[in-house]
Length: 245
Figure (cartoon, one colour):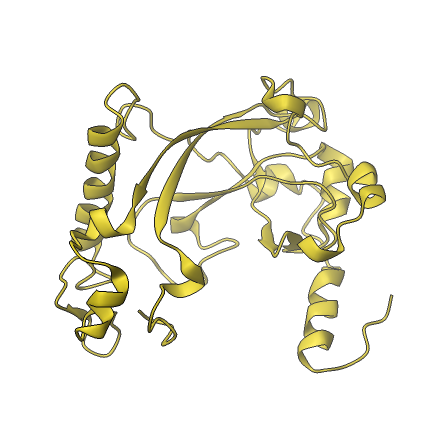
């Protein structure tokens, strides 16, 4: 555990990896810009935190699905990486608020891009993606843990120690930042999914779509200069200051 809070349960109580089959379709405005995917926005507790104000681009392009090639370093990570991979964002309803503050009026005013009843995406501004479950695997079985997590911890086990870069009574997460080791872990997860769901395609058989996001195409008039207001509110909350409406 790299967060030092995993005495009896894993961080955030995470104990499984779920897989989803997602369908997407770009809006007409996105297609005119020559893109299938827009900027990958971050969502913290369900609130769109940018970069830059989210509503401005949703008003222009509709509720587009965003993507982020990790190797490009924009908008994340802000340090060099030497592996491929993409991160996607699916805009939900009432993106200006966190989960606990999403009212029905807000959800109506900001419906997001999830298609009603998971119908096939039409590319209309409020129907850009749908999804369905495609199986799940448990972390215990992926790691080869043959006892309960609590027993494992009580017996001195550690999935991973950030100081030594290895685990205790476990080797699955050894060398956490090794490209070779990470490739083996991804392969192990894919093989476990295939073993549990032999009739479903593996990641190799159904790879994710290429991320074609381009800053120049998406922001033809230059990058925004206004800060995302959600970041300002979050910063004031962390400092214990009154949040201005």
